[in-house]
Amino acid sequence: MTNPPQTPAAEAPAGVIRTLRELPRSAVVLLFGIALNRAGSFVALFLILYLTGLGYSPGQAGLIVTGFGVGSIVGTFAGGSATGKYGARTVIIWAMLSSSLAIAALTLVTSLVLLLAVSFAAGAFGQMYRPAAMTMLADLTPPRRLVTTSAAGRFGLNLGAAVGPLLGVWLAAAFSYQVVFLVNALVDLLFAVVVLLVIPAATADRVSDHTTTGNRAAEAPAPEGTARYKDLLGDRRYLLFLAGMFITAVAEAQYHSTLPLEVQQRGYPTVLYGALVAINGALVILVELPLTPFVQRFPMRTTVATGCLLLGVGLSLFGLPFGPWIFVLGAVVWTLGEIISAPSIGAYPALAAPTPTIRSRYIGALSTCQAAGWAIGPTIGTALFEHVGGAVWVMCAALGLLAYLGMRAGVREPVLP
Image 1 (spheres, rainbow, N blue to C red):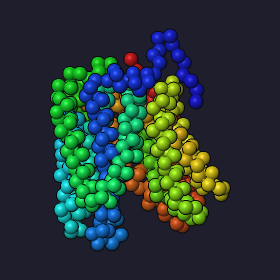
Image 2 (cartoon, rainbow, N blue to C red):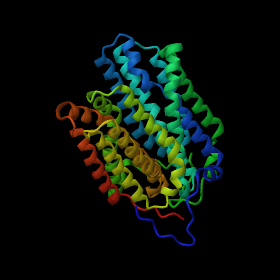
Image 3 (cartoon, helix red, strand yellow):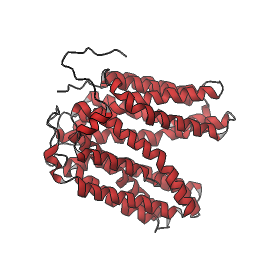
Image 4 (cartoon, rainbow, N blue to C red):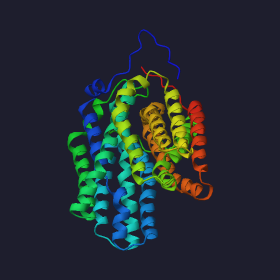
């Protein structure tokens, strides 16, 4: 990476402590709420086990879980539109309330059709809040702090992702899957109440006045019809960024679908796969936040493109015919790519949006492309693994290279005040 030219007046990237101190209380509360929500999100982890416990076949349970995944994609897309129309705070509150009801309903219905419908609703409402939350954070954060704020948000998400499964396993063992889902519903309800009581509509008057796009209220919706998803089609460079994110998500999805099959086929114990996932989580939690201020010294297109390339290269190492150490090396390289690129990727849509009225659509489009890549990736990867073997890891290298080229061409360097 090439270090960008520095000017005497250039402000060095701030660390996470300074950034959090400078954020309004509403933004800090929102970051905490996102982390708490992630820690209490159990449905995706335990739904298939709950369904097979009800007597459904793996195929039927898989169909219902697919409904949950499709709902998640629809929810992220709809969340961007709803945020632009009704405001971020309103969308978060109603999405979390609706998600709470849908998840609670999972414990009450037993027919295949109803489970499919309720699972779709739980996936949709559970993801609808994400574009709204990211839009509100962008409205509350000065542009120069967005990347560090994104890293802080990812820290909370990853910490929640590490703690959540342990709590869910304990609840399932001590009580039942119904209790697991009811706790999930309670967490969503708590998130809605916190946003309602702690982040008032008056937050609109406290957002940063330093944004290049003239950020206004987190709760002030754009006039109806002023911004639509089709308006994105005119921003061809952002479309290249979205394409790069989609193919990166397709590649990254292999770590939870094809990688365990590769480990098993090579005759290694399942604990190796668990160790690789643990390495990824531990490095992200321990390294990403302290490294982010240094990474911000480089051009954003460089960090995003390089990170995507390293991610693809790291995953491709899993196909090399060496011992267990090559899996560890692959996990480290893949995680380094994630650490370098992810905070900037999270901040970029808000910085790329030409006006505040379309910001939620830019954020929603990113979330939708990532969700679609994660949904399609396992199908592509496992099919290649079954029929062509190691070709799936060659695909990851190719996707990493394509993402690198797309990001180099698509990512604009934000002009910050």
